Image 1 (cartoon, rainbow, N blue to C red):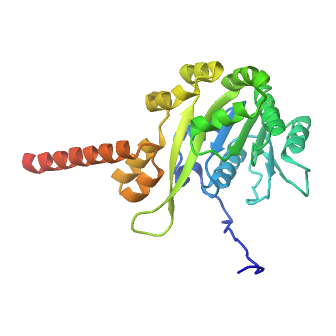
Image 2 (image 1 turned 120 degrees about the vertical axis):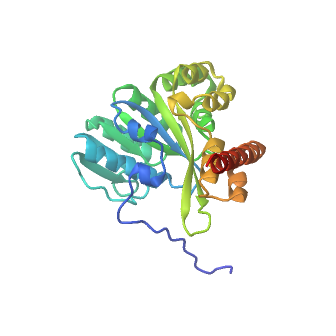
Image 3 (image 1 turned 45 degrees about the vertical axis):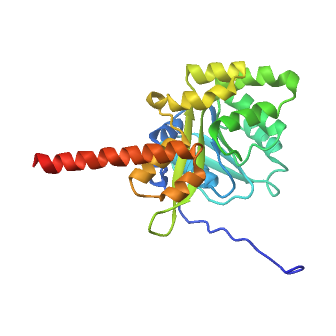
Length: 280
């Protein structure tokens, strides 16, 4: 009703799960061991980006002895120190904005910097510079797939500076994980599907030359480097009977590809099952 008070509540668990239990690839866990570079965690609002960021922070804190600075708006998860020194800062109470908080973190000898959102040019440029100068920077963005995240960063820069930023990004970016939360099949709760991009020589060349339209194809053929598309992730979840086909098609980049490959995989599974029965 007009003039009525409304509220939106988000349940924050007291403990965040590890990356494997959340449904992430070992590649995401491996990024937690990197000494420098930029990692982007992307997805629409409510797709679990903050949870992934918190899990990566906790993984690093438990595994390494480093100085971690987390810049958040607002602070949702309170991290234990583990083997590291963890300093959490909230926009509004501890810092004016993301850009100024990020610059202050660089002055305080941070090894790992977590940025709640890369939302403006100043923050983006500072994050890339930090990644270039020996810091591991992990930040979130609101984009619906991995290639779009790269394009969003480049497009945030004035045209005359885009070539320079593309070169910086090609050199410093470690990878992008884009998240999608889908209803579990036959039970309550949500399950994670992802699109994963890791920067190899082909991806690096595309970023440097501005050939971003070629990146989806390179993700499709990049399984050896740990990459997969959201469609690959959805098919895997379908075959494990963890999501239903209608939800998968609603989140697919190419619904026909998902439907056709899922049906072909089911036929192959059935043939294998019948062959096993006949063999006995």
